[in-house]
Amino acid sequence: MEKNRKIYMDYAASTPLDEEVFNAMVPYFMDDFANPSSNHFWGQRAQGAVDGARETVASILNVKPEEIIFTGCGTESDNLALRGAALRNRERTGANRILISPVEHHAITETAQQLCKHFGFQLDFLSVDEYGRVDPEEVKASLRPDTAIVSIIFANNEIGSINPIEDIAFICREKDILFHTDAVQAAAHLKIDLKEIPVDLLSIGAHKFYGPKGIGCLFVRGGTDILPIITGGSQEFGLRAGTPNVPYIVGLAEAYKLVVDNFKNRENELQRLRDYAIDNVLANIPRSKITGHPKDRLSNHASFVFENIDANLLLMMLDTAGFACSSGSACKVGESKPSEVLTAIGLSQTWSRGSLRVTLGKNTTQEEVEKLLETLPGLIDCIRKKRY
Ligand SMILES: *Cc1c(COP(=O)(O)O)cnc(C)c1O
Image 1 (cartoon, rainbow, N blue to C red):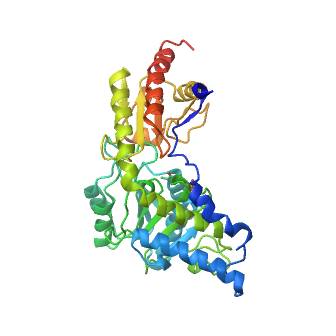
Image 2 (image 1 turned 45 degrees about the vertical axis):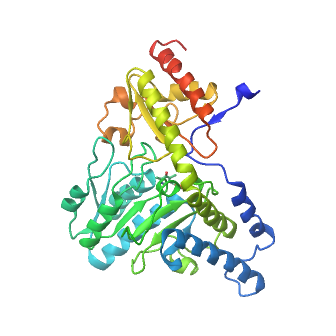
Image 3 (image 1 turned 180 degrees about the horizontal axis):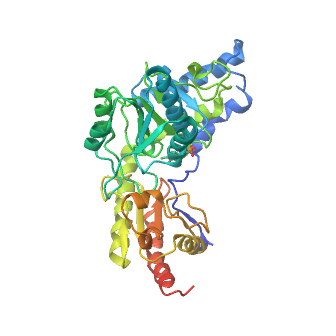
């Protein structure tokens, strides 16, 4: 039985709910179920829970509670930030250009493409280095008065690299250009102090840090004028209509608090396991490369490419062998379009087709990593020799 246990190594895709988070959420499904907008006793209890959650998130990020907007997920936060800022800013100032990196999550790229194709915005892309990082100097040179918003991912979901977000934020601030960062991966592993980092908008999603799926939040710095994308009631300071999802909001705050409280204990161990996995793969698998920065990357994130390997086939074989990993991109089985991120960092198709993302979490053990490292070289060899 033990031998056949499945090993989960896809924490960048989602994480299991923390039991403490679940327990914190439970009362708000049935006991304190009321609508926080209701003025009666029950309503006020629900409102109290939402207020408490907002204060928790705000204090972690070192911002004001009214700068935190709860949303339906990380994707919705990205949509609200980009679409809300672009539309409102153009209305106010005429600025008609959106500037993003080529390694954004689809929540940003697809939103930017829509704003470009259907709403008449000009969309420009920055470049990235071989590790998938944006150069602040290039941002500085690329800003123009007609730039409505700049959006750059904090830490990349596919290749783990961390961008110099603080430097970029200062550059945008200096030129008075709105700056958003997608911190959905970053928030799970990095201490983010928004008194130090002058971003205007920052997206977070709970299920990447042991919180529930279907809940996120957007930091909107005081004075930043954005248009709501979901209209209706005046919830969330008029920026996100709809009765708030009280238990999930409570869950997001509890999960965020727990994950940040555990950074000290967890991050060093994750990094040690990550480096162990990276060093071992590169040493033992011929024609293998790490993707993303070797050190300046998410502590739980190991990502690779293997020459002449079909990533989907490798994932299927890993799954059969009991390992849940990812290719890193949203590319579906049978669809072998190369990842935009791997193309942007300059990999040719013979390499980019063979991507593997191994992301570790709080339940990952040394033994599990060793099992993967024992299995992987043989699978790669089988695929290259077409023995499967
Ligand atoms: C997961 C993820 C998202 C989307 O968040 P959801 O809550 O799943 O919608 C956005 N950006 C990044 C970088 C992510 O990793």
